[in-house]
Length: 358
Image (tube, rainbow, N blue to C red; front, top):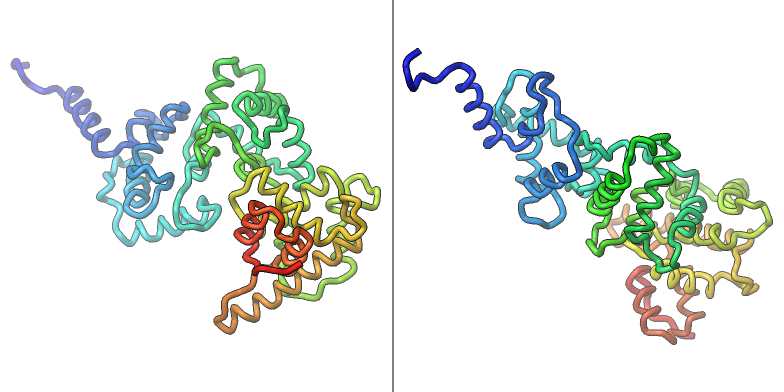
């Protein structure tokens, strides 16, 4: 062989190097199986930072197009390049991909949504939780209270680590994870779910990590699609009155109000929930016992269904829909008498109510 001659092996290495430059995802592929290897937490964040080029917290538009082309071609056994994905194929691929992974249907991919797709070491934590959702928000609030040891209204890094340690025990994987790996998992979960990047998880962020099977109040019966029956009310009451003592209180009440709040606000923390509770309870807790009985629950659900029906009618007429909790919020504001500017601002901003007089 003459000096300077490029061997097949050298040529292949050169081509592989070029492929990695042209296709960011291909560097994470197993050369033999042609499948993506499990990413470490750091590698996952490399992928995220690469495709979220503008750093706005989403992969969207041309970023999403680029990711889909490179993701598909990186796992293609024929070593096809991103250019092999035609516009027609891309449109079809995007539609299928967004239907599967765009949980909030905003047309963009968040870091949490991407984590469900890529084979990350920590994915078993996500998938275990998604495959074993909680029965209701009552259970969620009990877990929240158990791990928010300092009652700060947030799950901080150490508290999240304790939660993940217990989650690993539940999944029977705690023997395989060292303390250093647990810290790495904690950092990754914070990077995935801490949307406002304050180093801790607020209520709405923890709710994404710890999902509930269903927000029962999202069902069509509470949106005016059908007549609200006594059986419907009994079913809701039983869902939240977990100890069967005839009232919805403590974590039961917090779970119910969390589900109500989620109807009008997707990004919320413990303070939001407390202020929301103050407004609702002042307007609906007639006997002032700090609990919700069946009659008080009936009033709330009837108001919810009534405004749901009005929303559907106004939407069909091309009119702006009223907030489904407007009637309840108005009662809450009347009871508050607008004595605290912060509470007044929160209720008006969250529930879209008009000024009310006492």
